[in-house]
Image (cartoon, rainbow, N blue to C red; front, side):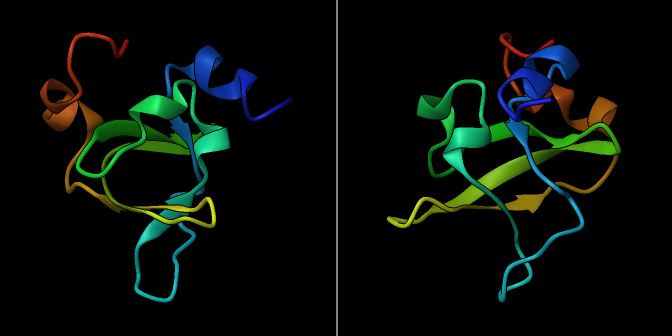
Length: 89
C-alpha cells in the first residue's frame, strides 16, 4: 500500500511512525506522506499516524531537506479532535 493511499483510507492527514523520533525527540515524517502537503506548515495541527496508532500532532519544523518535525499532543484523539478543524474526518 502506498503512503498516499493510506492516509485517505484511514482519515489521516500525515502518515508517520509515532514511535520514531529525531535527534531532538520529535516525531518526523515528510510532506510526501501527507494527503494535502500544502497543509504541512509550521504550527499546523494534523492527524498523524498509521494503522498501528494515531494522534493529533503540532508541526514544529519543516526542513529544507524535506523532513517535517512534530510534537504529539497528549491525550487521545477524541480529546484533541476539535483542534483539527472541519476538514478532518
